[in-house]
Length: 318
Ligand code: UDP
Ligand code: MG
Image (cartoon, rainbow, N blue to C red):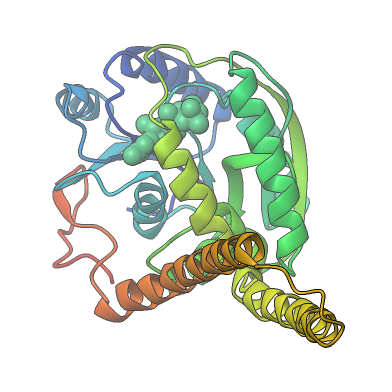
C-alpha cells in the first residue's frame, strides 16, 4: 500500500453515542479532502459498544483502521499509539466527540503545504464547557507556561497537524507520563496555529472527570519542569533565615529577661514547619514515583486487536 497523504488519529473511550455522527462527518470530509487518507481509531479499552461499532465501520470503509487496547491506558497513550501506527505524510490528532471540527483539517493541510511542520488548532472560543473547566484550564496553562523553559502555545489542546518528521521524532520519546501537547512543543520545528471555534460535545459526556484533569495537570508540569523540586531549596532558605532571625529575637529577649512561656509560638512554628516538610516530601515523592515508573520500562500500551492492518506487528513499542 502506498503511503497516504494524511492520517487521522482519533482516540475513543466509551464513545458509542458519538460514533455514528463522527462516522458521517468523517466520510463527508474524506470526500472533500481529495487526498489519500487513513483514519486510525484507537479504542482505549472502551466498556460500551464502541469497539463493536468501530469494527462495523471498518468493514464498510477500508480507509478506517482500528487498534484496540487490552484495557484503558488513558487519552495520551491512545494518541501515542495512534501516532506510532500512522503512515501518512501528515498526521492530524483529533477528539472523537466532534469538538474539533474536521473541516479545520483543510486549513491545517494548507499551512502544512506552505512548509509548516506543526499546525495546532487554537481555540478562539469554547462552547459547552463548564465555567469551572474554562477557568481551571486557563489558570493551568498560565502556570504551565511560566514554569517551563520552552514556549507552549496557549489555548490549544491535542487537535493539531504534524508532519511526518515530527511524528518520527515523537516516536523516539517514550516517557511514561506523557503530556503530548508539551512534547510536540518541545520537539520544535516550524510551528504555527489556525484558529477555530470549539464546539460543544456532539453527544455523550466528558471522559475527563476532575480526578483525571488533576492527574493530567500534574503530569504536564512534572514532566517539563523541576521547579517544584527547586522550591524546596528556596523554601528551606527562607524558612532557615527566618528561624535564625527569630532565634536572635528569642536570645535577646531572654537576656533582657522578658521571656514568657512560648507555647503558642512553639505550636505554630512546629505545625508550620511540619506541613512544609510534608508538602516537600510529597513533591519529592511525585518525582521519585516518575523515576520508578520510567525505570520499569513497561510498554506504554498493549494492543489486543488490530483491524485493517496488513502486517500484524509482534509487540507494542516500549
Ligand atoms: N479519551 C480516551 N481515553 C480516556 C479518556 C478520554 O481515549 O481515558 C478520549 C475521548 O474518547 C475523546 C478524547 O479522549 O476522544 C477527549 O476526551 P473528552 O472529549 O471526554 O475530553 P474533554 O473534551 O471533555 O476535555
Ligand atoms: Mg471533548
